[in-house]
Amino acid sequence: MPISILPQDQDGQELFNAISSFFHTFGIGNLLRKCNAQKEKGVPVLDIFKYKLCNVFSDRSMYMQQKTGSFREAFSKNTFYRFLNSPKTNWLRFTTLLSKKVVDTIEPLTDETRVNAFVVDDSLFDRTSCKKTELGSRVFDHTSMKYCKGYRLMALGWTDGNTFLPINSSLLASSKESNLIGPVDKYDGRSLAAKRRKLAQMKGTEVMIELLKTAKAAGHQADYVLFDTWFSSPAQLIAVKDLGLDSIAMIKKSSRIYYEYEGKQLSIKKIFGICKKRRGRSKYLLSVNVMVGKEQKIPAKIVCVRNKKNKKDWVAFICTNPELSEEEIIRIYGKRWQIEVFFKTCKSYLQLIKECHSLSYDALTAHVAIVFTRYLMIAMEQRRCEDDRTLGEIFFFFTDELADISFGESFQIIITAMMDCISAIFQPTEEQMELFIEMFVGRLPDYIRNSLTKATLAA
Image (cartoon, rainbow, N blue to C red):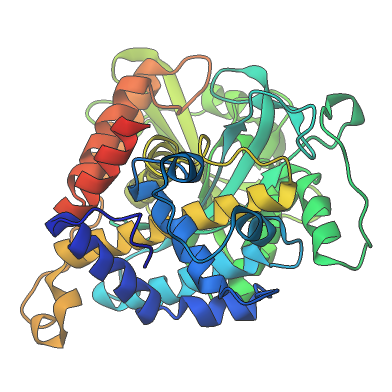
């Protein structure tokens, strides 16, 4: 463990122990070797990886450590950047395999009847300048509803309702040449570097399917896939169904997307208009069974929910398992919000955006993978501190499992979001996200929370 990274106090010692335990338990060194992260010279790859992982807990960047003389590692700056810039390391496979090991540790702690879900979403990975950054693009940000410089970070995660774990990701550039700002380097089409860049310039809906395929190939399993309106087209619902997975998604209120209802092709607005709504204190307005798709059709259920603060406003969800109850559809979809907390935590505390200023697409991909590893580690530590059964099998028979997200919580999350989000449906306000982040960070062990807070304030 780099001595320059961790403070010599009680928090630093506990953090040292937690990181060492995480590396040993999940075999980080073996995973790096499986993903072609191999040393070119004498410095072990694991040392460089550990340094990069731990830098988030330091109040100084690598540059400032070198300037102040506190950089005491056995490798040079050039060695560090060669590790990040390597086009041969399969970071997509690394995070997928690592998250599978973490999921296998957490999943036995919950009841077999609990619903687990994949969650897919994207977030802006902004860059102040993209002229020299490989594949830097003008990309559309769904939150601000504007074009920004950088990438869209498409991420796939897994949740059991209590713990969210990132699985894999891709930094998406623009597929349109007119929106590309940075250079586009050429690679042999058979190489990993070329495949990584090809994935980056695919449509977001296609990338989502590729990430799901990669996760399933590694052994990840879930009952449902949760995503928002940006991915909830009929074609996407069918594509996910073809993978053997059911979807729960929020429907875009578009007059150009049709669903087959009572033998007619109708938009969601038409279906909502012609159907009789439930009255009184019903937890939802409308529930109808439809068929999705044109040539290939699959059954689905649409559930509409009223905004209690604005009776004229409503939102619709679709589930490709029509046997699932309306309450369960709403409750399970509420778990999607954990990916919003994940993105905000990575940006605010884990230096997702600010730490890496490399111009190489490979280095940026490596940085994202290491940030995901940081989150996996703190999520595991958080679960270990909250769930007594992680301390040993003796507690398994005497401790109730951590509470799953309730229908009421899901419903309240949805209603609150609807009240505040007009232009971008189901996007949290800054105040809401700050509250969620405070709750997440507040549940972390003291030694991790203190180290993250100190480094964030210093930055």
